Image (cartoon, rainbow, N blue to C red; front, side, top):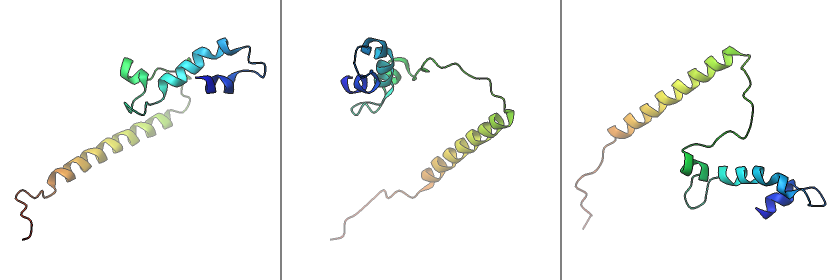
Length: 97
């Protein structure tokens, strides 16, 4: 936390209290090396937006493209799982003697 505050504070370091909410958000949205998930994900199930106003998308073609990519990704994931399920798995492995 101290290092992050040093990054955001002014040269006199007298405005650190104003930066605490931002630093707290950064810390809580970074994955932990132990849990491999962010504290927000573990607590709330998702990482909330950081006080950003959502803009109305002015390019509907991009939304359609995004949906197509999402569907293609899901289809590829299903195909990978199906392929993995068809792999031959040795059941009676006997070491060479």
